[in-house]
Each structure stands twice: as structure tokens, then as C-alpha cells.
Amino acid sequence: MCTRRKKSALLNFIYRLCFVGMAVCCCVPAALGQITSVNADHATITSYINENETHDPIFVFNQAPQPKRGVLNFSLQLSLPYTFKWYKFDNVSESFVELPEIANISTLTGLDEGGYKVVATFYRDEIQYDSTFVAWLYMNPGFEFSMDNNNGNVDASDKRCDYTDFRINSISVPAPFRYFDPNGMEWYALANEIDRYTMQLANGDEEYVIPFQGNIRHREPPRRDTRYTFRIHDKFGCVRSSSIMYHTILPDATVNPHQLPLTESESAPVRVEFSSNPNTISAQNSRYAWRFGNGDSIVYYHNPPPPIIETFYTPGTYNVVLNITSSDNCHYPIQLPAITVAAPGLEVANVFSIEDNKFFKPAAVSLRRFEIVIFTRDTRQIYRYQGNDLRDWEGWDGRVQSTGREAPPGIYFYTIRAMGWDEPPTRNPPAGPYNGFFYLFR
Image (cartoon, rainbow, N blue to C red; front, side, top):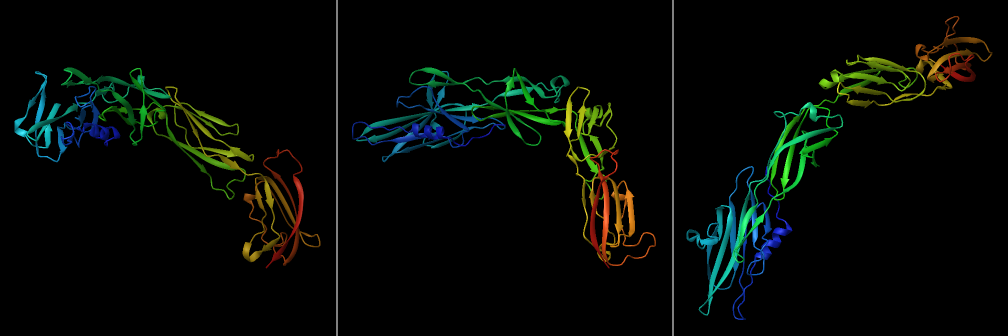
């Protein structure tokens, strides 16, 4: 695709350069004129210098995606009446030939490539004065190129784990535009050239790329099948494109950690279910290696693993990684959100209301063993619990354990012994005792 660029400072300079000031002694009025083109895609100037010691303009019309014809406009600022004639350059005779059918038309449309001249004539004191203006039109065909893409696809030999090579099959560079210096009687050439290469992915992202020995090398190829569109931009703003489909050899999978429902989500032991779903063909035939950060690891060969449940006991932070290795030896490490196991902790309220709470239960985190004994003010034991996980214990319901009668309101004392998951199970006795009291309301 060829795009029309916004008129640049160079183009405005060319327009000013095309003005011709003419004065003969002090009695000839000044005549300022120019040839412009409002719809040209690009503008530059000739290498030669004309008889007015300026450069003539060259207007470029890009021919893709649709062919375009040239448009020229002539204007002259003069206080006297004047006439003008158009001429077109003839390559054979190397001279400008008059176009009588378009005399006195200021705007020409539908023009072909080549040189155009305007001669403006006016009189002062019966003396004829002529001003000459020349402009060139270049119909830029743009570059042609194609990718060696195996019917629109990328061969496996073009694909690597960390980059992909797209081979440029051919680039057809247009011949230089030739224009003529009518004063020096010499031909000149305006050559086109590649300005840059760009690559666009299916998501619309576009980036500059540099050809690598005839190839375009793309680092970090996508893990999904993706269509690439490569574009060549020439210095006149013309763009040619070629698309190619990349079929990935990289493994890719979606991993979902799902923490099993527990009362305290970070209290040990923390049980988490991990599942993975392959997103590419290469991922279906890959080796999967789970690393849970706690010393445990599981490896599955050439088969996506089933859901896995892993239990984390010791307080700390665990970085879980799933490493996928494809049959092409491409690696894909998937870092999962960190699993956190809270440090042991115990908090006991000093007020217990049967109406509000129904059960008296200390707030415990990451304890592997727990024992509580509740006493009256006269040191009489009315309740005792011992277990390995407080999540299995509802708490004290405010009744005397031996009789089932409701304990009367008042102050009660407790003694607690506990062991955290950060301690070895052989420790005996557990830490404690922790003593305290609370008030029972009814």
C-alpha cells in the first residue's frame, strides 16, 4: 500500500523555490510564479540548477494501491495582463513540445509521467517578456517483494526457540526516474531506495525490523499461530506488504492454581490443586515438570499432567513453576502466583458471649498440635480439648464437659499448649503453657 504523506517543510521550500523574480532594469514589473501539485505524495528537487539559478520541483505520485495521474497548478502574480502556454517534454527530441489544446488552463489533471513547462508572456511598452517554469512528474511504481513462505506458511527449518527467520524471496527495485536539464542538455536520474522494513502482528502491533542476510529475524516469536505482515517503505512513502502465517513450535499452556477451600486460606497445611491445559500442538507432546518450591517435584513425559494436589506445611513463600519442554527442545517456564503459608500464631479473646459467638475458640494459625484446658475461679476443670488441627474443633460451647450443664456467667481461666508447623513433630512437650482468662456472658 502506498500512503500519501503530509506536505513537509521540504515541499514548502520547493514551492518558494519555484517563484521566479524577474526584473529588467528598473522599469520591468516583478513577476512571481510557481508550479505546484496539491495531491502529490512526495516532492523533491532536481539536481541541476535552472536559468533562474534555482532548482525545478519533482512531484512524486505513488501508484499503489491504485494508479494515480498527475495534477499540476500554475499561478502567477503580475499586475499586467499575461498569457501562458503549457509544454510537455519529448524524450526523443529532448525538448519541450507545446500543448495548444490546454492553453490558458491553470490546472492540469490526468497527467502522465514526464516534464512539463509553462511559458508566461506579458508586455510592457510594447516589449515582450517571457517567464519560464518547469516541473517534473514521477509516477512511482514502488517496490515489489515476496516472502519465501511455503504457500503462506513458515517451514519448521525457519523456526527456532528464541527467534524466527522469515526469508525474503525477492525484491524488485524500480528503475531510476530520468529527467532532463533543458539548459545543460544533460540527463539525470532520481533513484528510489528502501527506507525501512516494518513487521505487524495479528494484534496490530508494528515494529521496525532489520533484514539479516536476506532474512528478517524476529526475536521472541509468539507461542500461538500468528499471521505476520511485512512491509517495505520506500523513501517516497510508498508501502508494499506481504503476509505470512507462522505456525509455532513453542509450547504454551494455561495453568490454573486453585486453593482448596479451608477456613484459614494461609494457615498450614495449605492444599492447592494445580491444573494445566495445552494451547498448542507442541504443548500436547511435551514434557511437563512441576517444581513446587518445597523440594517436591513431579515430571510427566509427553503427556499433559492431570490435576495435581500439593500440600504446603512449613510457613513461608513458595514459588511454583511449571516447565514445559517440547519435542523440539523449546522450553517454556510458567511462573505461578506465589503460595503463602502463614507463620504460627494464637490469639485468645477475653470475652465470650454465648448469644453472639455460640463457641469459645482461640484464633489459631498454622498449628499442628493444640491442647486447651478451661478452669473455674476455684481451679476446677470443666473442659479439655486436644487435637492436631484446630479446624477439626468447633470450640467450647459454654457447657460443663462432664455433665452437659450450662456454665454460669463469670470469669474462667485457661491453659493452652501448642506446636506450630515450623517445629519438628518430635518436639515434646509442645510450647506453653499459655495462661489467661476470659469473661463468659449469657
